[in-house]
Length: 387
Length: 192
Image 1 (cartoon, each protein chain N blue to C red):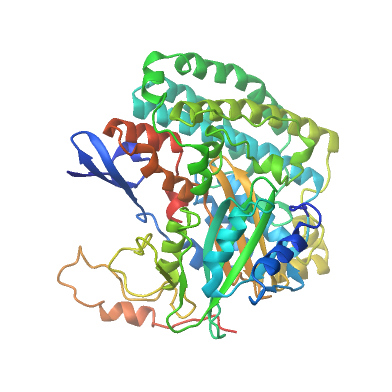
Image 2 (cartoon, rainbow over the protein chains, first blue to last red; image 1 turned 90 degrees about the vertical axis):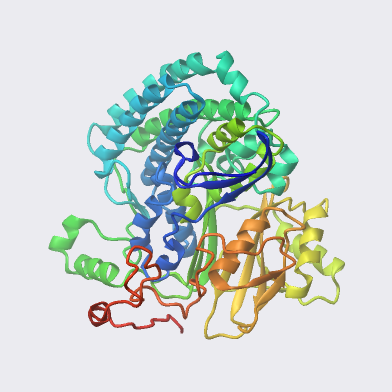
């Protein structure tokens, strides 16, 4: 029997459709069918300047917009051969780690809700609200941040914001303990996730899985450690890995990652304080907008402002690929520049798109109810898969 | 800039490839702002090269990060396919490129080497109409099955087009004249 799960099924996290080939209640084959959210972002990017594409990236992984901003900006910076100032880098690290906590909170809440544990959802949403307020304070948007720019940040962090971040970070370990108390030793949770949807390390690598999906299978691979960017080599943190690669392992990896993110965020706050007030974006006005105050007083700044807003910046002819460790895995942007202010080609390497390919292997020979747990444990975002 | 590969590995990759495939045309892409190690490989030998790079114990490119198509209209060869390889044990990235003609672009599939190529190649087929011969399921992945055309080709227009779906307006067989008057169809290509 063929059964369609989705595209309107609430536990497919958006508009994913899975065509299940069933024998009784056992799954013979599963085929994910995607594309319901396709908006042609890669095509649109070819008609926009680099800066104009940043808001587009928010809409890919809308649970971690800042990670997408970061990957985009780092790739463009690599193409230009520039680097953001230290203060901007530390703020970027702080915000992307808080974003990771937020993304994992959404994942944990919805994953638990799918399996039937409703309480966790409300706890997670409480912390998500806390993060969204912080994000709102810094850039004025709760969902679509667009806060990072090529060469730094769009504006400096507001006064008193770091104290609020510190309070959030200090409170987080106790909240993670709460989640763990509700789930980690919960017999129903363990029954629904232990030995469910297993993925061997060999399959995970062959299928290109990254992020917690790969680490859950016991492969210690984290781009923050392996290929550090934004000064991640200065931060002290561990990379949690699983052992057998089932849904429970992936759960454990993400929960422990939240603790590590708390640690990194704590260090980042200290680092920002150490660096003190300073440039939040480069003063290279060929690529970066001059400060707004200067535009009103200096003719030269006005010209730079006008040129960058009207034309965009002109990168050299070349190619660059930069990947970051987003909450879902390796998120990369590949730019091909022909020397004009618009990229000739922008390729997005979306982690959810690749990770979803492991679903058929995970659920083969298992029960329909396990598909829900498998999809939940993959932590996919359809905006990023379909782009 | 972050140094990805250990020192000397870039030369080592080229060296090993040349030793293994002596007659093959292998060319490194150079340019002022080419920030990656990019090697051009003939389309016919892409599968062998990939299998070698994966199985070679010294290089060990166990993972394929992504596959992407590129359209260089009006240049000939018009299309390129980029393969982004990742070696977990050596902590290195390598990009392979294949150039394809504008007429009937086709290249052998690497799904046999890395199963992850399956969806990436479907995406490149979907966007550019590049045929991956031997692919187990070469169908559209992101666009609807009945879509006509290859949207990411440079001669494919962005907007100002007739609506593709009229399922909720059954009486309308063609777009209304007003629609065309408001926005004349103008094909914009960014050909150099």
